[in-house]
Image 1: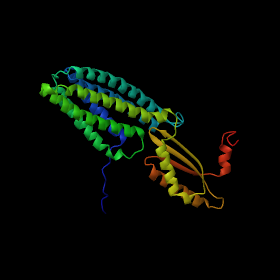
Image 2: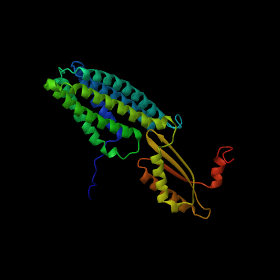
Image 3: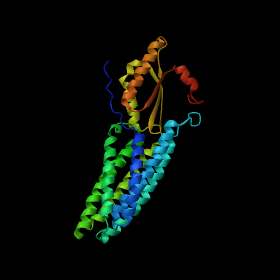
Image 4: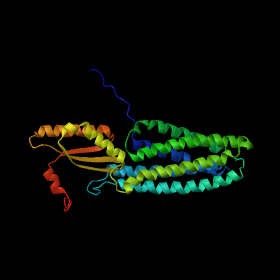
Length: 306
């Protein structure tokens, strides 16, 4: 009997976050102490970015976990808004810290000075760079997921990798040669820009949850494309309800069928439509139900048909 070939299991989003939080926490303490012991505004900015990013990852991890494992009787509408609220709070933290680092960096640009005691923080920052690059590479299979928080997390990882790499180059050059001393405040400006950009992207992804909008327009168009691919499988579209919970699109579709269709055929057609929509909106939870126009009219709010 031939042995089954086992494919390696990839890390899911929560596992990647847990690894990132653990490793970053181990590195963040020495990095912050070493950076504060130096005179480099760029390295200090990097250390502050790391601390805030750990808090961001921790809150998103806890709220995402709550959203995916909540009790339906206690949270009948999910806990996705907790994730959006946490992301918004951290976006404010990124914004305030980014403005503070930017102000100090711009002041240093006017009177650049050669940074001192940068050897230890540069070594720690290099280790952090390798960690962030590895986690970003491991999260590549998650790039196609529609979850806004996954995209924000991967984007922040990429920004962190680019910012850390540029900071190491600029601060090293400034510490090596006084003529390149302006590289240190420039690195601070880069880190501040990364903080502000991350804050903008994070809040933009959280806005849809906080504004009670079902799904972004581009995702709605993908749903319609999935329905169009199976337009001959049903007779009418009676209702489409969408929302996002814990970063996962939830799609409920009610389709109308002619009275002379057999129930077995109706069930098969609903499954066909469900697979078509799932193929268009990867990672979504899709429910397709058959319903008659009379049933949908009876469930409509009073006065809706007026």
